[in-house]
Length: 187
Image 1 (tube, helix red, strand yellow):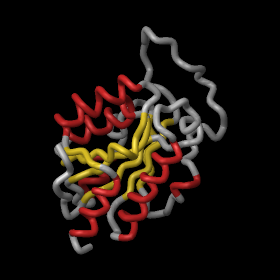
Image 2 (cartoon, helix red, strand yellow; image 1 turned 60 degrees about the vertical axis):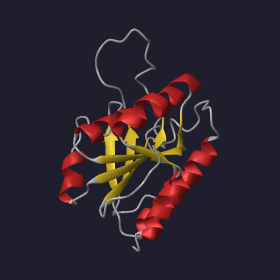
Image 3 (cartoon, helix red, strand yellow; image 1 turned 90 degrees about the vertical axis):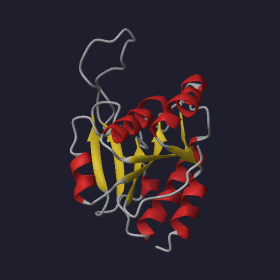
Image 4 (cartoon, helix red, strand yellow; image 1 turned 135 degrees about the vertical axis):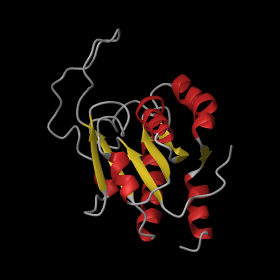
């Protein structure tokens, strides 16, 4: 489904564009994902709409079949990339799981601002982005996914999220289409 509208108070959520992750071997050029996320970021800031910058600083506890990376992360691993130009007005969410709403106060912060819709970008499509979208949907937010402002290390995971998961959670569109909807709202 194409993106059709944006609510009056829509927030932008950018997931895990941080030093320790942007160097992964993504299937799409990370520079383009950053550029499109930044275009959305500028458009939201220009209109005084909420911006949420999410980083991950560790891992959820529990056993998994797939071995985890070392628990020792480089000092700047969780630092947001400079291209985001973090502002004091931005909401910063540091998570230790895939989704930005799990074990954080993001839902309460957004609802206190009367946010009813979220636009999500970032990495990794099949984990951090998808988990955040699922959680946002479950909390009752309208969800829009900027599909050209996200990527994954797995072509299969990326395609599965876009084709099978995202249509069940909300609407998808390009960063430019979302910016055009912001422009057409007269904000």
